[in-house]
Amino acid sequence: LAAEHGDTKILRTLRSVPGIDIHIKNVDGRTPLHIAALNNRVGAVKLLLGWDHKLLNARDNKNRTAYLLAAAKGHVKVLEVLKNKGQDMNQSTLKNGWTALHLAAEQGRVDAVKFLLE
Image (cartoon, rainbow, N blue to C red; front, side):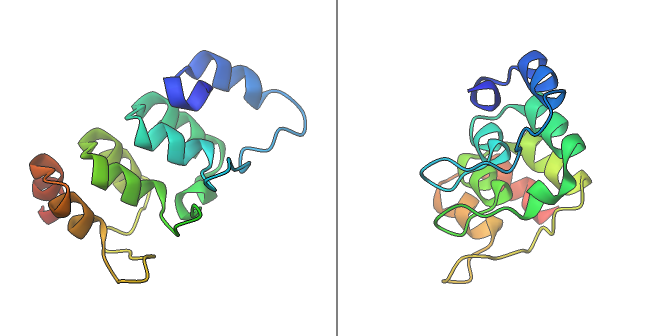
């Protein structure tokens, strides 16, 4: 819930809890980073990636990264953060070979398409 609502204060508190698993997944296979990206919670995305950069490569049950989810929703500021943290802009983890650009275009996310083409 902290990632979904972008509550960075709670996320910081959780970070100090011994044994906390930041890679925990929900029933859809989504990590807190997936959820923060999906809900356009830029501060939470930055905090989570500062906690563990490996979250960039986490995939949900449909093999989607947080980057692909953010592109499909048109969350450009989240895409910028993920790119700056080293996200491969052309990464495709989907069976059909689609990239973030394909997903943004399919959903009519014009600003995200422009960002991904830069």
